[in-house]
Image 1 (tube, one colour):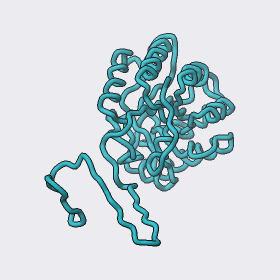
Image 2 (image 1 turned 45 degrees about the vertical axis):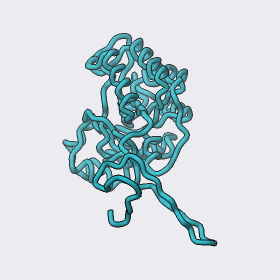
Image 3 (image 1 turned 180 degrees about the horizontal axis):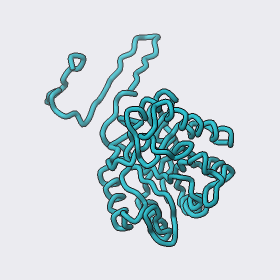
Image 4 (image 1 turned 120 degrees about the vertical axis):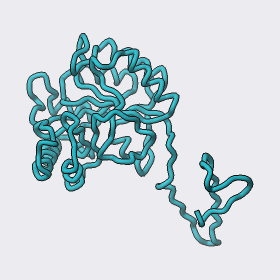
Length: 271
């Protein structure tokens, strides 16, 4: 506070909603100012859409629907089940990657991390990452985690840091007011695509995202003919995507959201 002066009416004790900075550089010198640590609690509204557990409907249903609307998502995979019946193959994961998606990871075996020691969690994360890299998943994808079953604890956070993971998505329900994430290993979700969320409720959430200008994570597992415990009806998903496109919302992968922590990216609006 002592480094700032007041110009005109106002007080440094009041909420600041506008700020102007003027830099007077010395002759012959280049002035450089960093604004990395300055951000406000509102931003362009955006959705981080993801699918967990590498079900085939991600490739067969979700990807064509999203691609048609200029939207992308994050697929969190379980490396031990990739290639199993009703699961994505590594080739399909690479195709998604080559079309703007990011492949993050749940873990190697999908074991709830709260049942494991810190060293066991590190092995789960590292072995999954190694399998992903060996099968063509490039970039930072293998360093983004969605906790299996939503379980995480202090050992999980320590293991995440020790293995250089970048983000961890929980199933805690909350908004992300803005980027950057305040706690990147504890990213909440706003709602699920399952039988606990109706299409009308999902649209209401989208309205709130647009009106209040915040970033939200939403995730699902399976798209099917009708909703279920871990499934959402394909017809509802199509309608929701149309509604997102109508709102011209930005869709981000978890990697794009991470890149916005310290830089800028080219973003796409749903169409």
